[in-house]
Length: 277
Image 1 (cartoon, one colour):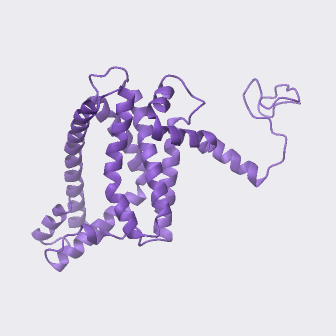
Image 2: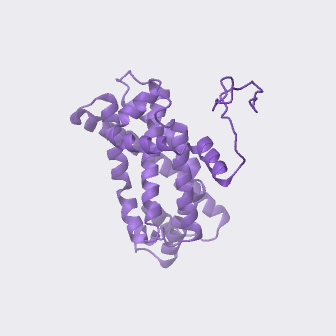
Image 3: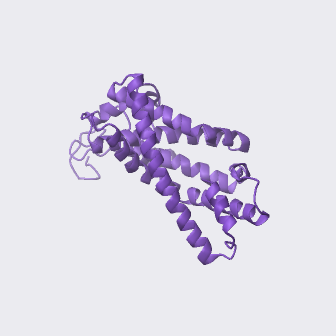
């Protein structure tokens, strides 16, 4: 028989073509075949995913360091793993928007009960627009976060030469995807309870900082004192960057609201928006 992809002559006991590597297909298409091909091509959802997820929680240095040093089969590659994180985030936001709109409806918790009613209403609308933006562009936000984190981690570990910028990129893809997958799974399981999601969202930053610290400690073989100092430097850089981004975002929103709405009319309302950050 011949390979259907490259026409190379195959022995009947071959499962894969030795020339092009294509899998030998002997059975007709079924729903099971289609689902397997889909998950294999885009997510590689087999035992590799479970092993990658488990080991990234317990020994991230083995997974990440292994990939950087050439291990390619034992664990999922970072791009496929990151794709699953984006996919799960999309599922959560889809369920939130279509079936559980009240799941993320806790804007009032963040809005100070001060100022005029108009200002409070404006703040509620501002937070709603912010959440809508985060949901609509969550994939872009995920992807934009990785190079920023990679650059910051390279600066923080400038005195450590074992990983270059590209390898820091891999480190942060794996770590960010692991964090995102875990958080989104928890969100999906608790989407029916708005208060529970609010509690989880409040703890996200602690989980993020703790997990990234654990990853860096393992990869760079740091003491707790060293990782604490690196963490402080990391937080300082992130804080400066965050302030710059927030100021830019506020300016853009103020300009937008001033140009396209008639609600942005009082100076105290501007101060109320600033107070949100």
